[in-house]
Length: 174
Image (cartoon, rainbow, N blue to C red):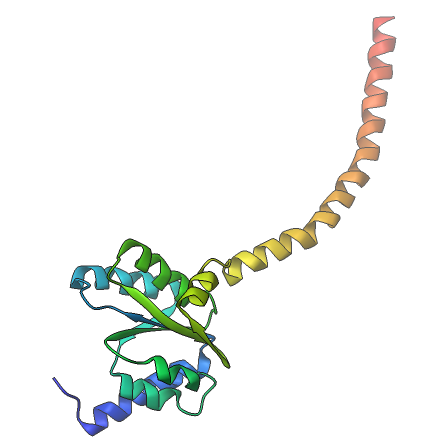
């Protein structure tokens, strides 16, 4: 079923809005994937905050034209699913995990703002920790010195209390 001009403009506007906020775009060929598997992929993408759509390549080329992702237009060939995310790792992670489980699903390319990535670079990007994981590690690193300082300060009264208890026990025994 083809789209009329107004519907095409609406799709281009919707994709342009997603691309304007995007930190990463990943393209994958879905030829031979069953509908049930694609539904699982869409659910996983939704859960991870990834905008995932099967679109006509010409419409996406119009949407990325003039953006930092315009270099990706050369890789838009064949039946593709587009994963767009505001987290630079999320789209790569979702599509790469799905590609591991489905050999017919092939990652073709990806892009970060101003940089086009090949399939191997997208797979490498997928192995990076997510933004939340990195923030948690940073917070843990920042809290470690403070926690150690508090434990050190707490040790002085604890040792004093243990010393008093030992003197008390010694006097009771005598």
